[in-house]
Image 1: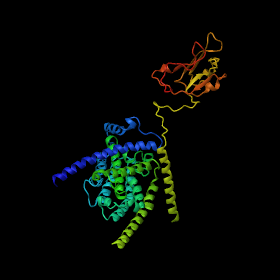
Image 2: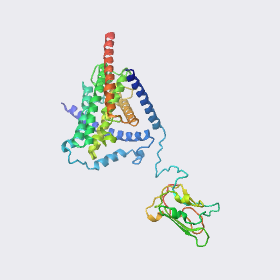
Image 3: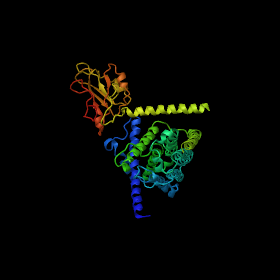
Image 4: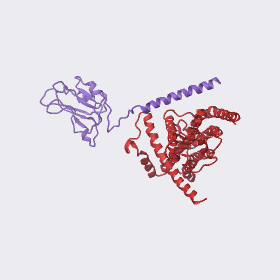
Length: 328
Length: 154
């Protein structure tokens, strides 16, 4: 590895890490603000102009708190779980093409890489739940694993449909192949399935059963306090961001948009607008729908999402086959 | 099979319906009143503080019979007759910190000389500030009088 690549990777890791924390701060604030306005409240108003400094203050407060470790807990794994939950969320951001020039590495199997790394989150949740030695935490962890197994399947099948259309697993090439037509037009059902399963993937309401407050106090987070808790929260917001980034890449044409000066870099604006638009929809859904029951959650995945994703995949494959027979 | 698709369709419609409701809420004015800086309008029958009813000349209607003090379950009223004027209170002390705002004094008054005024909760750091003299000594009129208390009423 030459020194230029090393420097490039070092700088991008720093940038990505900074972005992860900035994203968590912004999203935390936006979520609370939007939650307020969706319920005709105001949200945070006291710290700074319209409560804009609320999240940094909360972060400082959490840093100042002691991290309590229950006596009966598995100490090492209990400490390790928040780190395991946060560290893999940095990796997918390395392969996501924010703009033609703003991509750290373009992997040939970028799509599979992102989905594989995303699944690490479940392991962290399970370790956290198991090591807490707490019934609520354990139940939350079990739910999370079952839920993620069920909802990973439709995501993979929909991603496969898109890969069939783009004839590539590289995220950059998927974006480039949407220059003429965004895949949301060809795959409206796929987009819907992806977003529903994506909501469930990042354990957000109405699929937030692993941390259902009314049933499990806080699920796998029950025993966590201080900085460990905030690491989990940062990981959750980053998960959300990655799911939305992937949706932007797969369906909404990535960085494509009206031409801007210095398009190599500035087209990242279009990418971020699309990704944060999807994040807004996620927040919107969260503050609209009540949490689903556990059997409803499982039924929805196995009875609706997976059959529809299968049909979608089959129709896409057939369409691509016929298209190629006719036009080549 | 027909029901399967029908359920899905109906479910999707009702979900969109719900999303529309929250979207309308997002774009309508928040109903929050930020308390120390803003105050919501009080209802006219809000039980904020007890007051003596006055006639057009500013005289209190109270005859100092003392029924209110007897019926008060919290024993927060002390009525003393005036030494010089007949059937008028000389002092009408009201301990608002003990008052439960039940309204039995208002209901029980034979001459309807008591009422509740819609004023906001009083805040003070000293206990004495909650001892109010409702009846000024010079004239048998006036409104709740006491040390100046913090209130956000303009």
